[in-house]
Image (cartoon, rainbow, N blue to C red; front, side, top):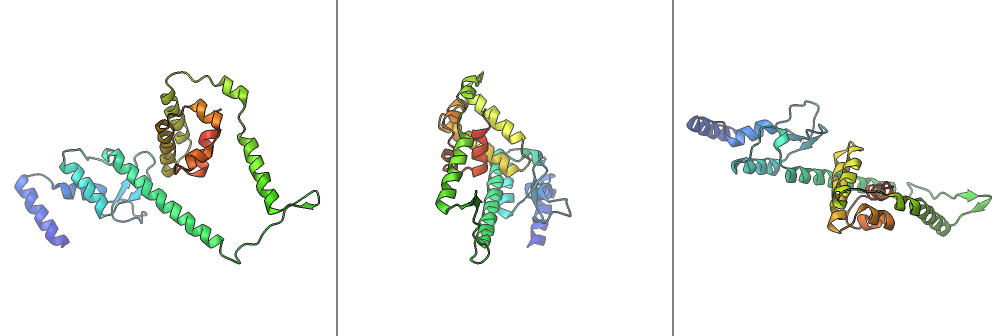
Length: 224
């Protein structure tokens, strides 16, 4: 089948005098790295140089993209919505792997309960839970002076975008970068500016919207 396809492509190229769209896309997306085991075709993120494996349906979408007249001369030309799809697929794989690891850790017999003693007294599970909740509340408690001192100039929505971009610049993993872009979109979609978010100090709002726990906590915590 591949040989027949190549023969057909050669005939098309000879007739048109130009390289076939199919061949050009397949050649562009063929991974040049011998150490990459994601498959014969990859999209290499120009910013972080991370490889994202491409399946047949991915490549066909890129071919359709080119056939509609859009340029695809390098990996920089891959459209944003296509990139976001690859980021999300990578995130789902990561979360599925974490879920499987958590199941393995939680297998009966693999862990043992740990009793913590303070000043000679054993803490109960209920008290440990309440202590953890109280500690989290103290760590996230807003500082009224900080809120008063938040002198955020310019447009409020732009401030949210700039703040999200700052977070994004402080991580290397592109799944995490995508999460910061997503939490920014959630905030703007709900009309939240930085002061409102910091006054509420409610990471659970974003977690309920599908944001990772750590990303939500950082986004809320670091505004000050």
